[in-house]
Image (cartoon, rainbow, N blue to C red; front, side, top):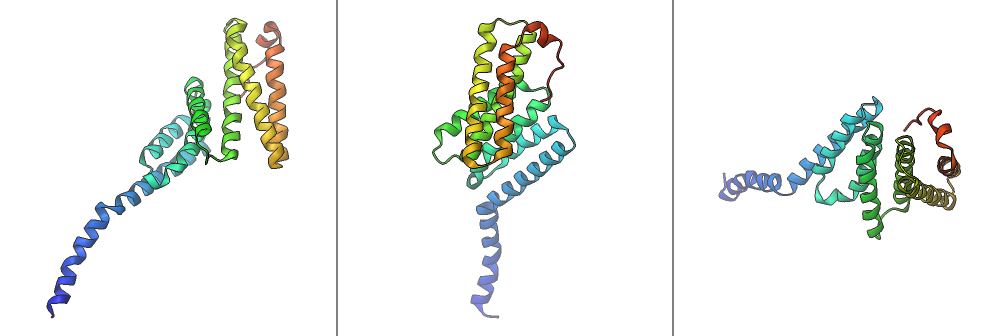
Length: 197
């Protein structure tokens, strides 16, 4: 065997190790993140929302740098799962933070921004319902429902511009519900069943 051929074969493991400990690490992280996302979606399908929240957190922590643009979508899905797993305050806080981050990002998807506003409006609607049932003063719950109303309106306007009629109709129905919640008498509200999140 010739010396160059032997030298080539001795360098193959070195090249493999360089790839593994260099760009290969991003690939490993991407695979782990994809696994966590699949797990989260399976938990959502099984209505195991608390486990889905944990899986979304793990996916977010594992995403490599070249896939960081997926984080806002994962944060939104996590907040939706939190709302379903008795984590309304945490979901609300996360959605406010996400909306602020999207507002600062000029490359943010308008559709994602509208969906975030709609989801935040839902959280604010449920929070208002609970605040009213707990007997909080109007000064406490009124700004929350007003913000919900504005977010539902923004979501409806985006859906109108995007030409997605079913989404627009749903956003307008939610807007009407928010207005009714602000106007309904407390005694009447107490007689209604809690809305589903």
